[in-house]
Length: 253
Image 1 (tube, rainbow, N blue to C red):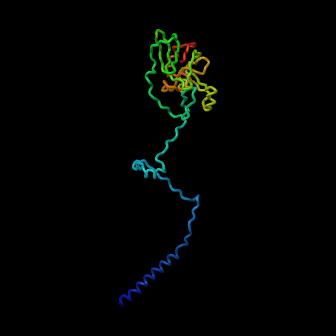
Image 2: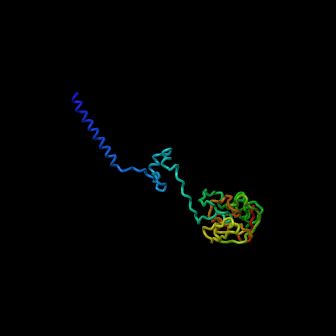
Image 3: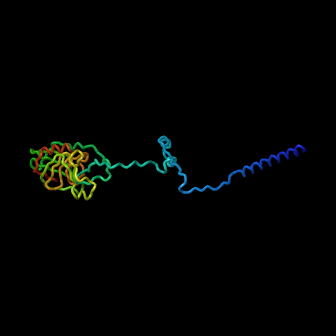
């Protein structure tokens, strides 16, 4: 019993010493004031960083969502306007999105070829078969040279008889006022050349705005694409140009 009585005072003294040291440490601390953070001083949480290796490892799902700012992918940047991209037809308004068009393979049936012709038109007459997208140059003896063409869109086709009133190599293009009213951003004038939508040759039909002309978009042959003009591949319009004269009859069906 006497041993326990002697130990107790020692333990009590130790506890008292520890308590006094703790109190002194608390009193020595500086006075703590609440921190105030204003809106314009609020720290910005850095955006999550996605890496190619992490993205492949995650593979999608909720984890992908957490590391992608709530988006499953990134939208590709918009395509810039290409001022060298010509309209599909001088009488047709230019594409609004300026996206590169799909280019299907050229159909072999629209290649120039000699075919039978049993119509009533005489030698040297040009016959435009609008529904089937063919141009015939009558040769006589029941034959005709046949070329593939592009024709007017629905609502822009026409029929009638014209004559070739003029022929021009690498023609210049001046958009008519009605087209400029629809598209004031079009050039007021474009000199002839490979970028010109009239192509390598043009044969003007009477006093109208219609032409048989080449095209720098040969993949549109065999389609309803223009606003009334008859378009051909450049190599075909060059061939036809050398075979017909001013005054030749043109029958549009």
